[in-house]
Amino acid sequence: MQLWLHTKLFMIRLLQNREPDNMKDNGFSSLNEIVESFDGRLTESDRVILSILLNDPKSAVFLSVAQLAEKADVHKSTVVRLAHKLGFDGYPELRAQLRSQLHPEVVLDERSQQRLDSIAQGSNLNALIQSEIAALNAISESLSQTQVDAAANKLADAKIIHIVGRGSARPLVMHFDRRLRRLGFQTNVALNLQRRDLAEKFMSLGADDVVVFFAFQAPASLPAGYEGLILHSAEMGAKSIVISDSTGPTIRPRADITLSISRPDEGVMQLRTGPLVVCEALAMTLAHKNSEQAVTGLEGLERLRNNLFNDKGSS
Image (tube, rainbow, N blue to C red):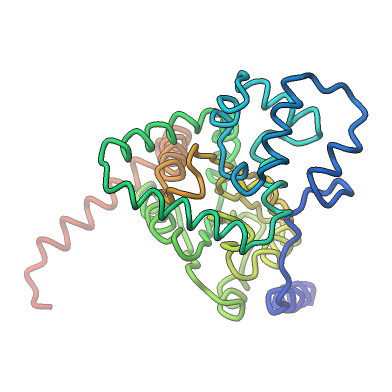
């Protein structure tokens, strides 16, 4: 009876077309108000940084911590300290707050213009390589091995790992699914599914399961039914993990763990090198933690491959 009630509530939540609240829960509607209400001390460097953010928010929302620091002629740590001073978990959350107060069309137009400017400069392999190197270097600014270990610990104990994503996250979803299956984990992929299909996919979600969401440029790219699925996971005792970009800290309701990866040219270049590295880091950490299961899984895969290739039957 209780399981039936949980399932009924889950389906109702999924079918409700509600968007999660991605504003920071601080009682204010804009970064301007947060700054105006701040009664602590702001240094001259802080004021320069805030001037850049507030005077041209359309451009500032695409600046990485390194780019903003260079523009303000301060150290990166000064930008991070200011974010903490204003009550944010870090610069990615501050930037996401700034982005959330802009009309989506304004952000989209600015991002589109930056992409057009980039295209107008022509194809430049070296520039692309340098961009990806910068993106990889930026991972350490927003993600730690401790966070990866925490996520891997939850995945290691999972009965079933459910992977949810949409749109441009498809290659990451499929790659991560393949990695996990090769290590002997049971997976369930929900890709580009609408709410009714999600309800059927997750009716049997259990307390020993983990749900992994891929979400970039939230809230626009959040998988359908995200809010209902997060709440249902919590009610059933399942754990949840979100792998996202700098908008990750603003996603509501929060997952148990959020792995947020920023990139210097976020909003212009939409390559997923950073999240792919995080997937690999999770897979490698899991293989280390569950070495026997990993070996057994790979050996089983090799045996099955040999049997398939040695099959003399016609098919």
